[in-house]
Amino acid sequence: MTVNEASNEAASKDQFFKELAELSERMIAAHGKEFSMGALVLAARFIAENKPFDRSATTQ
Image (cartoon, rainbow, N blue to C red):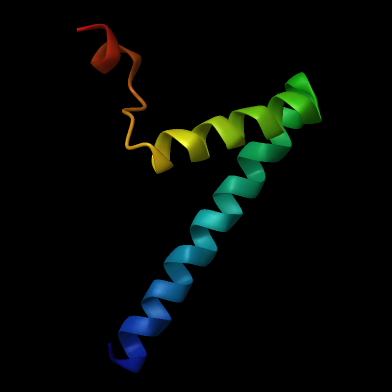
């Protein structure tokens, strides 16, 4: 990986962290910290277990 590629990857990851923080703040404001934490943990479980995020994919 070149220095430029590493820099681009770091910038991309930083943008995702920013988006995740903004989403978390909106979820906390709307539904509280417990909901926000639960939703993020559930998302992490879906990623770890290779489950689809789309509900229609699980009901077909």
